[in-house]
Amino acid sequence: MKYPINADEYIAAVREASINISDQEERYYRETVIPLINSVYRDGQQGSGAFPMNPDKIVEEFAQYTGRTIDDWSRDMMRRLTEWCNDAYAQGQQAAKEAQE
Image (cartoon, rainbow, N blue to C red; front, side, top):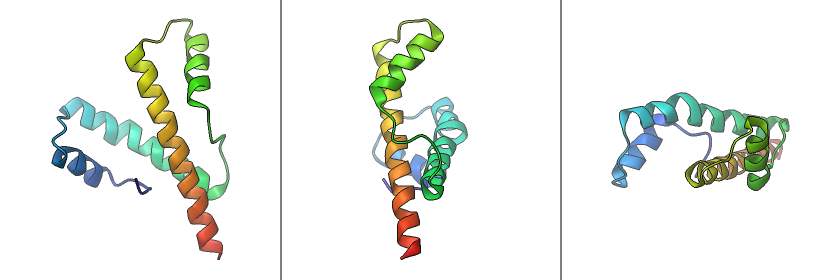
């Protein structure tokens, strides 16, 4: 995936791939996930932030912080989101490097 993400294009691509996405899920992506990913991309451009992150460590730390067991669906989502952030950060770093050349 190419970063930063345009929310309209992302939602259109999801729908074109025949993936059902509810209005609530669309709102979640537009208001939470995509802004987060784009923020991590900008962190990569600036060389700030704590990336890359270990997806398994994130799940473990979240479980410890909340004091609860993380179900399989949540664990999978947290891992995927962490990997997505790592990719966005790396692309941000690459974009900054290319801009300096």
